Image 1 (cartoon, helix red, strand yellow):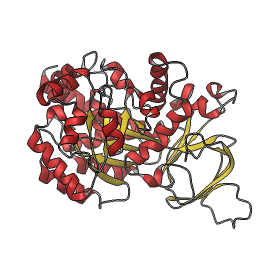
Image 2 (cartoon, helix red, strand yellow; image 1 turned 45 degrees about the horizontal axis):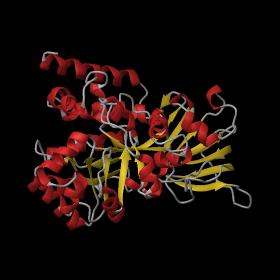
Image 3 (spheres, rainbow, N blue to C red; image 1 turned 180 degrees about the horizontal axis):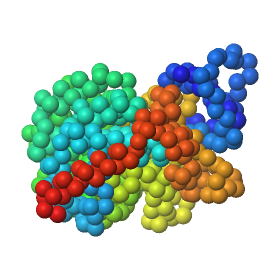
Length: 428
């Protein structure tokens, strides 16, 4: 389908300091065909023309760390620190999930993603084939992350998923990963590092999320988690850490040398009392920062607007009022996350790139006056401003309607059936 957006303001976000454009954006099938002034360009036949009425087009948000199917634990596993939250609530409840449950709960997350301008998610969870089915059925873009650990998964299963899923569908890709250093024995960690060497591929994991995690790793190995994993050859081909709240001396040098990404998840870190990541320091050190929501069990909403505000607000609280420039934060949310996920074709609005974008409605009180539209998005924007979300040239969400789901209530009912069944099984 070829679509013309006209009367638009456009923030391409190919760089953090990019200026606002006015003009048009054209899509041809799954690609962007034009950005800006159409003068002198032959006009193709369009299947649809959308008058943006001065609203702004941006690359879609990239949710660079999430566990989509954990929607079933929203507002159930609350008000506990990470260790208790995991072992008392998450692990026991997750043990009851079926593959079909994961499909249905992931579909619920996709409804939340697209209604909030999110066009891709870096999802670490189980039953990856059913998550892949959800990507195909909804048209949403998923990058799946390996989650092997002492409770499940092997080098062979990780290798099979990597080879199989990276060739399965244009909307699906797969990255090597493991749950965390503290849940994965050294033999399995060495296996993951060996796969990274075999494929020359980056590796991703939960990393330095809590002070206790870091202290325990130092006690056992004499090294921080970053240093320990690097000593195993884990990051020879890059990768990244989800959370990275508590880096220690020497970690920054390793991260820069290996080209590691940080994905910050401030709402989850605040709610689990894990701490505040040093995002301004990462920016100063030119360590690339992406943003994710984490799962709905610890967040509890999959909302990148809230994450952006917390990224900049918490840095201002801990560092100073000038910290975490909002345009850097917006760039992290839309563009850096794409590159972390291996979605280089989805990182900005540019001819030839994938047509993954959102339109934000500026004709709302929270976006007026227009002193600085980019800052408005970060400081005062909300999901209520999302008028349209497009993935691969297909409009998945538009003003309350979902192209892939004519009956959202059926998805909600199914999610409630799942948690009711599991709570009964657990006697809760």
